[in-house]
Length: 501
Image (cartoon, rainbow, N blue to C red):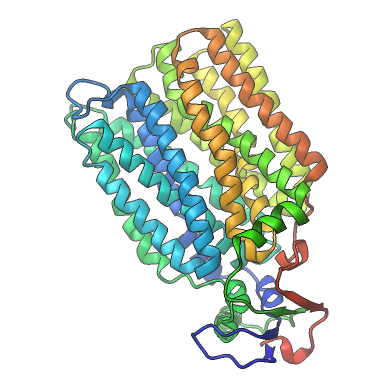
């Protein structure tokens, strides 16, 4: 790295700097260092899945006499769910702005602490307002996680692996959902735990797991891409050089030469006005794409899927304590989708895979609605249908996060993730539970069919938008997909002296 202005190690200094850090990060082979990134940052989605699924499955228990709370099942799946999502939207915007301004590492530590603290206090709920308050604050923390972590992951993972890693990490939410579903079976068993204790211990267990993740996350570094743009070029150089030495020692061979370098005007912060102008002025088609993908998946998941337990108890007389088995099955389908399809997003390509996963999930859900309306489904066959729908929908939903985190300039990345997550999730995740809680719990078949059809229609619409507007970002550098706002010049290939190895 060469600079026309001096830099001090640690404090930010601005100037014009030429660097090959992005190219060096993208040409790295997969290593133990990358596994540390995945484990340290990605595992929080497991906690999120555990949290949300547990609440959905214990809704019936919380409404029973003796639970320790005066609350109805509809309030848990409707009001509390909407407040959780509202908190997530607010947290995404607040922490997303801070993440672009102060760095990825500081914020993904802060957001996890907020999330864990609110979860612990949820376990101590003694009345409905306390429960609602800390559901909102739990969502506030997890919304910040989405912005800070997705931006950090995309900036640290090599281009050739970025798609599959991002999808699998976001899909790991459903590993937590499996755990939450199975855990609720044990915690709702009154022969093991009293009615007013089991659900509290479930939240407490989530806190314990989160503390373990916090310890691992301490070792995850700041994004070198964020560092060199924000006047910490020497820190970025030192970090990437140390990673290269570690990987060369692990692989037993030298790394290939980096192929390009970039010259940028460093800046300490980016104004919100410039971010908005960039996202909507320079990239309007990408903005439409992001909104379509987020709104479609948010309605499907927040409005319908998380009411699955209520559908089972209302239409198939499945006892409250038994819904966890069914939910564990559809959660497995959700995780297997990104796991098996993720590589195709890097090989077949983003446009084909995003469009096809959205369209296939929507069409399969239309088929499920038709069968449900005819009375042709049992609890088991409905679950099988949902597995097929969600196998594709989960990969598509995860690709929404991937898309908005890679198609906008680096300086706007966390805020772009936050904005599209907040707006799309507000449309589907706040209004959805409030509207569909009544539809899925009414006991009227036509109401639930309508809920299915709305979700299916929005997924198909998003798939059509992706077919025309999706960006072919597979195996491309982030700086190639969207040129940084600070860029002054890009050259390729880089001179041998700039390879850093």
